[in-house]
Image 1 (cartoon, rainbow, N blue to C red):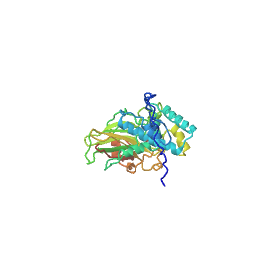
Image 2: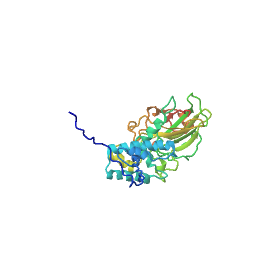
Image 3: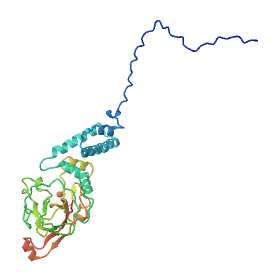
Image 4: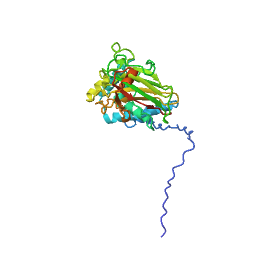
Length: 325
Ligand SMILES: [Fe+2]
């Protein structure tokens, strides 16, 4: 029996009517929304990247590196410490107070850097490769650049206070050769524990500071007062912080030196007395063992007479070795 014929249903669409054909409307190109560059928008997660990305092509490279690194670590600090808004504002006001405390004779920002150990860290990292040269330490806030120049052997103790001490030594290079003409700047606190700049009108101006020049054999010498310990200025915001942290403000007894000569690295250092009770608790972390000097007592009437000191007298011999850049 033959199969019934079934009509196939075509899947094709019916042909369009040609008579009513309109020109196809030009399709409008729909632009996909541009992917947002999230580096414009601040998020906690990307905070560092967002801030760092704002620098332009003309940014100074070193400045950008320093600021980017600061931002990285400051943001990490905030994320870890999570200061409250009040604490953040306290910090802003605190730094403002530090700034207002500064004047020609008071550098509260250096003090802040000192007590946080920043000054000592910067200083030490910049002088890591030592090979026999005299070690350096913090500058401190009491250096002034225009101290009077003296002949070797002069007395810089203008207020006459304290136990006299004779300081002498040589300025040498790493091979032990003298550096003639080296400039030796010295400054220290007086017997009452203050620098001249802290007591304008009380101490003579330029008390216990001076500039000496090494002779042809590198020798220098001067008369001063046996240094004593003193508190860093703690009547300002830095002192408030030390009090809040139950920290002592004292610095062990020392004499500041800044020694320079053409062709050599400038050396900023101290010498410390060996008997000071604060040697191991310096408020600014400036003590290095190699800088603890040997202050001896000399019993030599002729020599005492020659340098104008009563016999016996205290003396320290301190050679300074400068490094090449
Ligand atoms: Fe000092």
